[in-house]
Image (tube, rainbow over all chains, first blue to last red; front, side, top):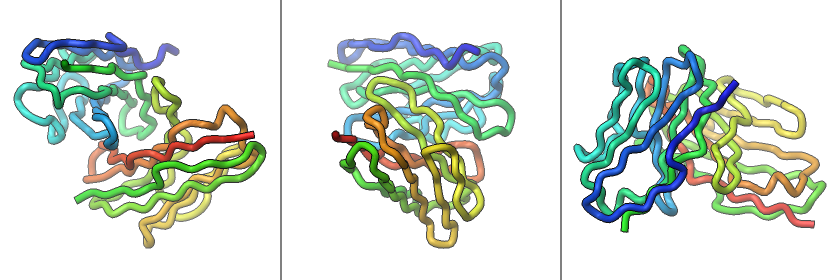
Length: 113
Length: 110
C-alpha cells in the first residue's frame, strides 16, 4: 500500500510569490489533514477534509492560505502571497472513516526568503 | 486552551530503558498518541491510548492516566536507531485533530 505522498519535498520561494503544495492521501482514506511545523515550535493543525468537504479549518492562519480537495482525492494547499513567517514544514496526513490511525507524509519544507 | 508539555531532549545508553513523559491540559480529550520522527521523515505511529493503563507493544510501551493528564512512553533495550524525536499528541476538541507537544529529541549513545 502506497503511503501519503507530498510534493514537492522542498520549496524555496521569494516573499510575495505563490506556492502550491500537493498531498496524495492513501487511496480510500476519506479524512485528509494538513499540519504545519514552524522552526522551534510544535506541529500545529491547519485543517481537516472529509472527502471534498472542509470539516474543520480553524487552524488556517489567514486568508493567504487556500486548501482544496476537488473530487475528494488529492489536496492542494496554496500560499499566496507567501510571507517570511510561512516558512516551515507542512505535513499532510490521512485516515479512514473515524479511525484515528493517521498516516503522515514526509512533509514539504517551505522556505520563504 | 490546549497545552502539551514534554522534555526537549534526553540522552540514554544503548541497551538501557528510557521513559519519556508527557503532561497535557486539553478540552475534549479523546486519547493520546505517541509518534516517532526521524529527521526529514514522516512521523510514524507508535501507540494510541484512550483508556487508563499500560499498552505494551514489543520494546515500546505507553501509559495513560486521564485523571492526572499524564502519559509516558517507555522504550526498552534501546538501539542506536531509536535516536529520533518522539512526539506526544492528543486528540482534542471533540473532533479528529491532533494537538502536539514540541517533541522530545532522544539521543542513544554507546
